[in-house]
Image 1: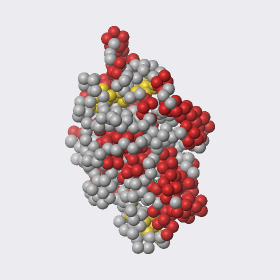
Image 2 (image 1 turned 90 degrees about the vertical axis):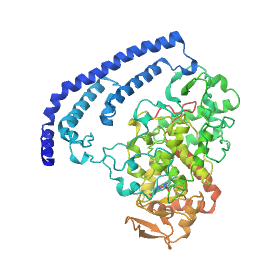
Image 3 (image 1 turned 180 degrees about the vertical axis):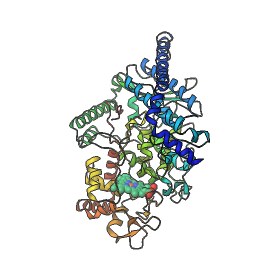
Length: 600
Ligand code: HEM
């Protein structure tokens, strides 16, 4: 029987061009119908919104500009269409329900539908009738893409729904399980699955919509924090969140404020290949810094109320309350610090290093030449980025941060993911790192940068400079501080990267031990017993180094900084804090109100 099915599949596959031709009318009718549905719905909605805004005069805090409100309703309608199909079809097919943006888009959708129908209902019709799981993909006529058991590796693919440490001992996280079928999509949180709409329903019946929009001319409502407040001192007097934040009390330490000169000079030193982008960054940073100064001198009211580009709306039932944690970034920072110690996360017991690596990987795809990548946009939410091989093992940090997002739904993922590492460094005894909010999230995966940009641990100093200097824009001093600082914490896990061991005797304490150990121990190459991969060991094999770490003493310029950092911990702390602050700003181009509007 199995052979017969295979023969059938081969034949239908061979006559695919002809079969697809026959299906064109059906796909066209369906797509055009969907398009006209949107069209009629949009007209209806436009009238409705016009009536609502022009005649009823909704309350200020609930009214969006006309076009945004229409768009919101359109997305809502699209979500409804999708929900009707949710159980029957694959995610790829659901994407074809996106609102068509142009005529060529309609043709693309028709062509996609033709392919999908033929693949699902002709080639794999027997697969489906015998109850086998089938997954559409460009290669799905290839028997390998037919997934017999969709439950395999679910643990690996999904972040844990609750605060729950991933047990490193479990087979489910084993590096050997990473060979999962390409077609099995990472399942993002439900509200992200709907692509365009960031609406979500919370257990508390809270409806949150986070929108990026054009100029908004009305003064901010007193209920909403003024935009400029987001960049000022922590709102420590704010009420504590409704969800209790562990036993530790929440201390609000002051947010460091950079002087105008320091911010502008940082922007000027921030070398970008494209001169226009460089100029634009410097100008925007200058304007922002001046505005910040004005604000602290008390003149912000005149300015702030006129030029608001961005609004985070929080609506609740009854509309009388606002999330008391809104805009309190200090509270989120503290919340992250409080969740670092996790005895159930074995064998480490501390997720801080994982968090620092997670943030570093969120930023490390930046390319200053093209302006792509960087942690802005929160692109790590998407399968294309998160499933990159280099990110193996980072589901722990992501699952905790996603859970924290549920407590503070007003923060953008891009801000939260960058804050994770910043807070973890501090929580592990490191320096306080300056961090500014204002990153925005991409609505879909189109802005996910090309993968394969993470550094490779077995290569040498040329490769390190290619990544850190050429692509990310760091000087040697910063590169050494970042690598040594990051690798003073945590360790390698055979099941994730194939390397194994710790870099320093105190892997959960941020200090300059990495540099001391690197200079003082005797290193020789050895093999990780579990994986057969080569790495460097000290004499008693209690510590390890990667080849890229060894470059920190092989390359003369890197070695110079290694020696300096080994001698002067305070200086190292300062350099690391500055470099990590720069890391989390890569690709973030801010408007004069400090908010990043466009993800390049
Ligand atoms: C040449 C550059 C780098 C290479 C090749 C590299 C490579 C690696 C590898 C292979 C691991 C082991 C992952 C595992 O098995 O769990 C690791 C862990 C880690 N890396 Fe890097 N890394 C680099 C730079 C950085 C930077 C710049 C930072 C942060 C500033 C960083 C922070 C960390 C941390 C904290 C861990 C420990 C994670 C844990 O214990 O879960 N790394 N790195």
